[in-house]
Image (cartoon, rainbow over all chains, first blue to last red; front, side, top):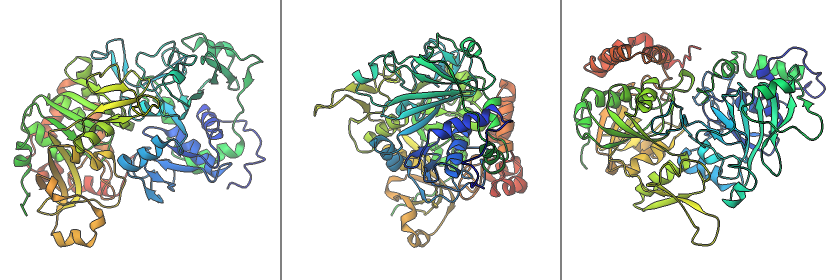
Length: 280
Length: 297
């Protein structure tokens, strides 16, 4: 099943969900340890794809608890037992998982989905509105994100609904620390790591090395720079050279996603659910 | 040793209005739902709730007006969406949320368990969680000269409610091998009292066969109640999965006040026993469905 992935040609037909999965999968290599939380179909598919192709030794802590599981396929929940079946170890959460994460030597990369993301890569999954105690929308809450932005992790954001509502100039509440108000704000607080890239249904962004403002990196095939600008609630920096096109998934990647990893199309739920308020 | 076996009625009778209650829970997992239903049946009021991640239990308690504050990291039913009744109660100001990151909640409970004023973490630095909660989180200098840390004030819940695979009459609590969330790892150790519902009450001899699976010693447990399928409609690995149909029915009902009330009347207030509850939610057919881990996608 995995023999032909290296020389597989670009797929001529694929969904944006599959493109986002392959972009995320490219960020994880042998030697990394990946973990996932709730409602994280795209990251889970990316980890499974990486393990079936370029990173067979990628360690995966499913649901932040089940070490190197062998799920039959992606189930309806990325937290429940069908995902962590056949684990090598159940990693106890209070003592062990948070020890490994907080230590800093392991689990250096983390995928973040949130309702709002701002130009400095701060994420909000807490409240929409200016009054914290009488919010317009009470979102699920920070969960593990409130730690992951502060403890040296490289953050990989995913957002299947790139719009001015989800890509905002300033988040209503910082649930996960990105580059705060930019520049060296993180360094002042002693924070290392931080946002690396943002993968949306339209484009891939990174962050300017000095100002730490979000910057367009590549647009997905068929998407124009203008469309990305219009869908972004702030002035998106442009790269110094021309805007690249995101590499599409290969035929082998698409086949693995559709036939092996996620035949039930759980990944499509990310797209349906993407109303900006129900991530996680 | 003191015997701890009691009834749902008596166990929940130990809880006073206004208490802070720590609840074992994840989005759709391992919640002591029979104990939660009893909180509603006894019309408890003004409870504070501590959850790592709350699911349907939080939504029911919000709908029934049992809680007025929540200390936790998240509330969601994952694939079944936001907890609508909880969400509306928060938006209307009826429930006050003290939101913590997971490492902060763990530190607060860890400090509570060890009788310390606080424990530090490096999590949450730079977020708005700290400024929002100055009574319980403070950025402090490392006394040894490093970068600042967050001091997380001890949290000592009045009661912890947990569900387990088995327990003996003395309150020794055993778990089958499974993923253990912090709410079994630390919550009961921080709380002043611990109430346990268990799938079965067994002779102590049964626990002796696998002492490594005993997660709570009887001396910290106050009450034990036998409640088969006591976590329904949440999952309880490996015994049974979450009830998708029931979650969907609640999600639909929770959108309207009258329907939410009717739902809670039907499934929470009316059934006089666990047996009546299980019959109400579908009886043998529902049990077979969850026992087979049918996700009903």
